[in-house]
Length: 223
Image 1 (cartoon, helix red, strand yellow):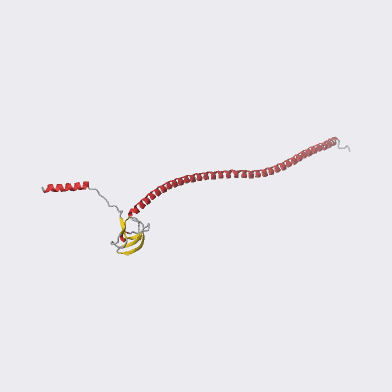
Image 2 (cartoon, rainbow, N blue to C red; image 1 turned 90 degrees about the horizontal axis):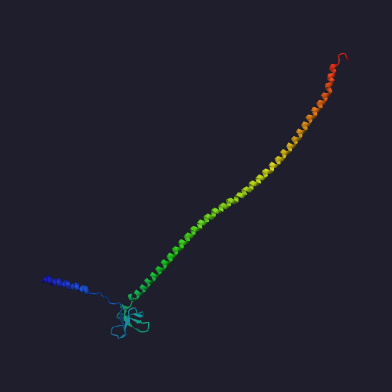
């Protein structure tokens, strides 16, 4: 029997746990405003809602009360313990949510800007590589043009040197032709002298030899 009651009690506990539902009391409250700094004074405002902003005229009005004035100009006394220097959670939560939403939007915007920046950086990187390649190509072309430009100068210099050599050779040819002509004239004159000498010798021999022959034929006592 005792075990039966125990099982029934456990069953009721589980049943209670099954049907129980958690709830929270809202943090929105209403604070009464009184005509004086005490619970003895009458209530001039039935309840100021949580988060109502007001100016404190006298923070230590007595009995734990402070004298305040509402945005509408209503003056009275409320308990100091309900006054906060910072906005309550019920007001901070939407502000925080707005900040979070704003941060999410800002993050999305920054992510988009970052992606755009990455795209621009990649574009600039590609452009830089293309520019470097073009610069290398143009530098090589410039060097080739310089080389080509330098060749005509060398050829022109060589031509000038050849012109000078040619002029010198022409002078030597003229000198050699002059020497040849002079040698030809000398040779002709020499042969002329040889011929003339031979002829003269022949004449002389023609005159002398007959006399020598005649002298040989005469007797020795001819005189």
